[in-house]
Length: 239
Image 1 (cartoon, rainbow, N blue to C red):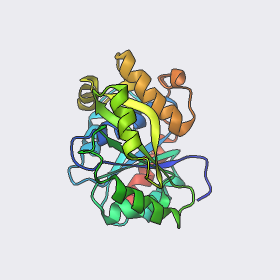
Image 2 (tube, rainbow, N blue to C red):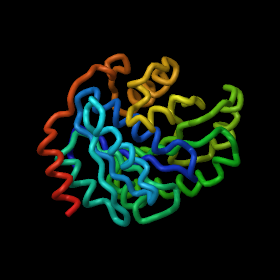
Image 3 (tube, rainbow, N blue to C red):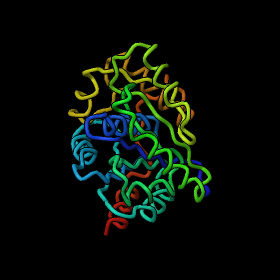
Image 4 (spheres, one colour):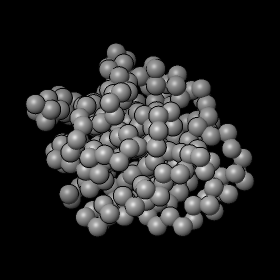
């Protein structure tokens, strides 16, 4: 698809890695930057959709969401024509949702802790990215260390242990274990809309890495564009 915006998959290897906190945090940051954003939530727990519902009650730029499982490629392509940014929140299991998402995504980000116990499935993901890249030349896969208290030395050792990955590279962002992530999620907010300066800097680094946005400008309060037509687009595509 020829477009200026990006579609992004965020997947985890198991529950509790912070996948949805990252998805919603990025979505909130983009909406504050004036971009229209939709999250496709393929996880059976629908945590991202719960956050979307909570956010609707706030005086904050709207983020839209839709739940869908199975083959999501066509839906994502429809949304790519109507929204500035499409974020796909997908569980870490090898599934139709994950594989079809990779065929249309520009990025795959997979959050892990810097421990071999948390990185043992990355070789499977590496293979999936390689297969999808044969059809989707835009696709790039990255690993982001998340919810970590690890020392820089531990992070570097983990990178060395995974040096033989063929299609996944490492994000420059490292997201530390901080209570603000869960507080922001429960409030329907993103970390960049909260007061934790360290967490804002970490997520700002990730967002600017993906979208080439100045992290200092991400919290400028602007309403998402085309709100009415965007809602209509979701209803039509979900029918």
